[in-house]
Amino acid sequence: MVSREPADPTSRPAERASADGAPAAPDYYSHGLNRIAYYRLAAAAAGALPRPARLRVARGLGRLLARAVPAERRAVRANLSRVIAGAPPDRIEAAVAQTFANFGAFFADLLTLNRRPGADLRAYVARADGEHHVDAALAVGRGVVLLTAHLGNWEFAGRLLSTRGGRTAHVVLSAEQDQALEQYLRLDGPQLRFVTRRHATSTLGLLAALRRGELVAMQADRPTGGRGDALAPFFGEPAVFPLGPFVLARAAGAAVIPAFCAMAPGGRYRLEIDPAIWVKPGEEQAALGSVVAALERVIRAYPTQWFNFFDAWSPFDGLA
Image (cartoon, rainbow, N blue to C red):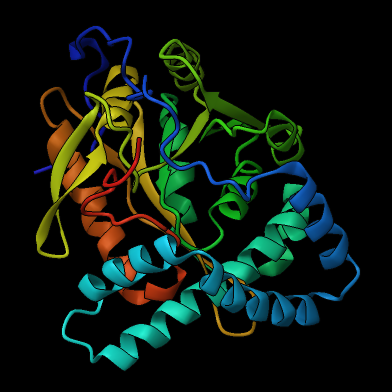
C-alpha cells in the first residue's frame, strides 16, 4: 500500500549517492541514426510543411523506417505481443507498422512543435486531466518527481508542465553519443532545464531542486542496468524498472506523480496525470508497483504510441 499523503520529512533516512540509479555502464539506448546532421535535415524538411501535412508525411516515413531497423521492429513486435496478448498475427503486424508511423509523427513534432515556448503549447492540448494534482503537490513545498515513459510526446508534456506554478522543471535524460545533437535538442527555457545523467553526482543537483520545491521529470520505463533497478509485474510478467526515482523522491520528501501525454484523434494531445504518491521509507518498491500499474493502463489505451524499441522484459539482450 502506498501513501497518498505527504510523509513526515523528519523521518526520512539520509539520501544515497545513487538515488537516480545513474548507470555506470554505457548508454544502452544509443542508435547510429542519432546524429546532428540527420536531425537538421529532418527539421528543415519538416519545417517547410504545415503541421497536418507534416504529420502525414512523417507517418509514411515512419512506416518506411520500420523496414530499415529489423532489431527494433522485432522488439516492438515482442512488446505488443504481450500488450495485446491473444491478438492474431495480422493485428500484431498492423500494430507494429502503426507504432513506427506514430513515431514518425512524434519525431516531426519533436523537431518543430516541441521547440516552441512552453506557454505556446497549450493550443495543441485537446484535454488535460489531473493537472490539479501537480498544483496540490507543489503547494506542499517539497517538489514533485514527474514520472513518464517513452509513450506519446513525453517531451511536450515536460515543456508544458514547466510553465505551472512558476517553478523550474528539470528534465532528466540519458546522454547522447553526439554532443552536438544533445545541445540541439535540449534547449533550456526560462523555467526548463535539461539534465544529462553522466555521473551519480547528478543526483545531488536533483535532490537540491526538489528541496527548493521544483519539478524533476524522469522516464520510468527503461532500466539502467545497474543496482538501481528492481522487478515489478508488468502485463502479467516480471520486468525490470528503475527504482532510483522513488529513492530520490523519498530522500527529498517529494511527491511522485505519473504523467503521460498521448496524441488524441485530430492531432492534438491529451495529458493524463495521476494523483500524487508520497514515498515513505521502505515503500519504494510499492510505489514502483503503483507507477508500473499506471504505465500499463496507459499503454493498454495507446499501445501503438509506446516507443520502447527494446524488449521491455529482456532489455539488455544482445547489448554490449
